[in-house]
Length: 234
Image 1 (cartoon, rainbow, N blue to C red):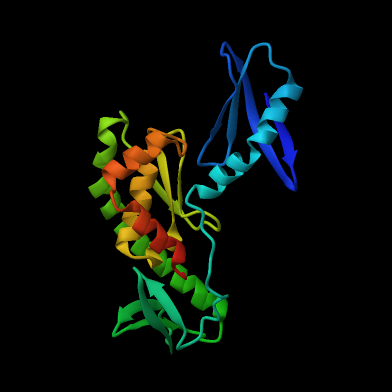
Image 2: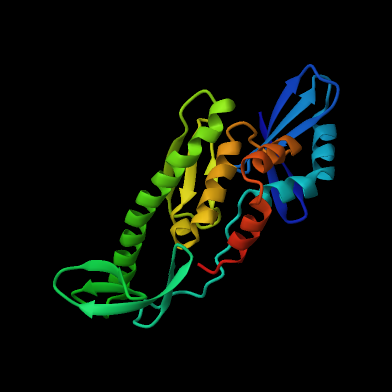
């Protein structure tokens, strides 16, 4: 059954299941869902009271799943503006041309299009270029790293990607790894870290000690890379 509790201004939705156990169990998953397992004789009031006591921990767990908070001011898409690609800064250079194209050359991202004043067109062309680059680099890195999961995941992990506003990546219960296309603006090491992080979630869909041991085993310097990723202005 589904229910919720309110903690301050935050509403915590949870899925409740009654089982033959002695204590209340709470698990937080990468999609921010919360599963609660309660002893058969437990009352709803008692369950909600215990969830409220654990609310700070639940919220902390939800916030920690590779959250993404854009730090860069709104882009104007004009010549001279800086844009990132694989962790390096490039200047945007607009060209008027009947054939639309985006090319990387000499420290510039050259965008050619019919109307240089159409900022939505510039933005659209740039995002399409980023997406094509992401498809190439994401799949290359994913294919190099997915063998990590062989020892604990029987199926073949699948990779998907899309633009996300609040997350660098996620992993669902069906073995799908989702990457934020914004990652193509970060260094390859950061993309690697997010992929390994999500692959480890195929075994542990939480941030338990067991998850961190697995992450540490497969990506020993993850803390340094995570810190680098969080400070990037994409």
